Image (cartoon, rainbow, N blue to C red):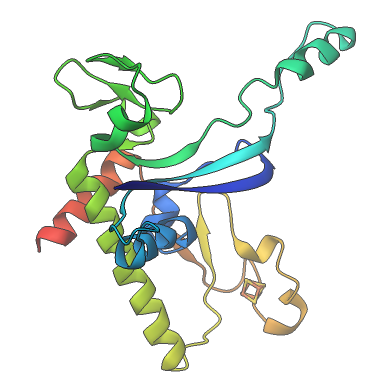
Length: 208
Ligand code: SF4
């Protein structure tokens, strides 16, 4: 039995950044998959095989309109709202979108299937080949275990990260007491990776 996880969000255009997953910064959605994989079962006791986890934004994306009076009409259509965004094992695509032919773009998920059956436009897609999907799960499990070990070992050093233009210090309410001074203290610069680069790295890790 196949299963997917849906995390509804009251935000616009919520995506799963695999670069953040790789660095252990955004593990919640993938952790749901791990739990489902280990403990999920149907009411009749059949095991559930997780094939995807998605955010579903309940607010529509902002859209440019020619005139303010057109905004009301646009709002009624809610373009881009409710579209699941996350990570999907391409092996389960047919079960989720039975109208998708041998190749093409899914009308429900952000996945494009090439004529050879593989995931196309991998960096802009939510699809993952089965091996890559499992490798992401293994990587996330390892990250979670490492973080838990660090907490048990009392690792609480002030060592914030920066990924692209984002650092948690920007919104942290503890900045007045932690004594970290942005611009003067060292920050951990994390590498921003495309999805294909993340898949390549976790594949390497899972086969090591
Ligand atoms: S402001 Fe201080 S406590 Fe907050 S994220 Fe940055 S380093 Fe950590």
